[in-house]
Amino acid sequence: MKGDLNSPSRFRNRLYDYIAEVKEDILNHYNVEFSFEEIGDLLISVCRSNDFGVMRYQNDKMFLDEEKFWRWVDKKLIPNTITVSLGDEDVVRLLIFCIEITYQMFGGGTKATITQKGFRQRRRTFESILVDQFVGKLGEIFVKKFLEKNYSARVELD
Image 1 (tube, rainbow, N blue to C red):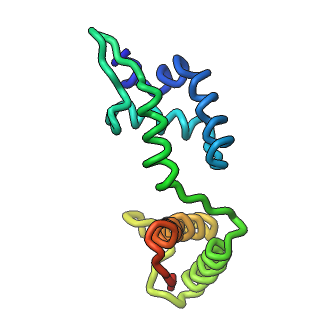
Image 2 (cartoon, one colour):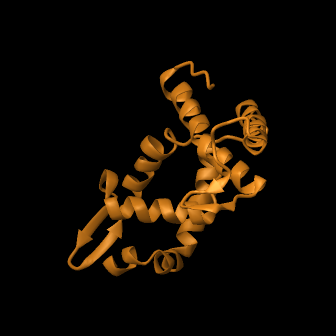
């Protein structure tokens, strides 16, 4: 029902078995592992946007067209999915870089501040700065991997 698309938790509950089945099918067919929550979020997103025409309407009811949904998985989801492990060389180099830059910040070796924006008197912890640095730059690795996978580009990160 249309109301289910407005409530992710109700959507997941109603389609629990189907989401679990899709999760296993993607793992078995494409060797890509998603969590239950990720598949649920992806499924509700594609249903809301009706990408690839995955939803069909009959009277006041909406139905998922499984053939079109699997075409979306095959043509859009899988080709645009990038997996990176913690042991990936780029991730390890990124972690080392983030540790170094965070130490430099605490030692006064950079112009970056260790106080919280808007709260100059509140010092941030080493861990919070490290996490912010790492998460902020992790996206660069995903973009690099995506470009190398889909466009045969060679990308060097600073």
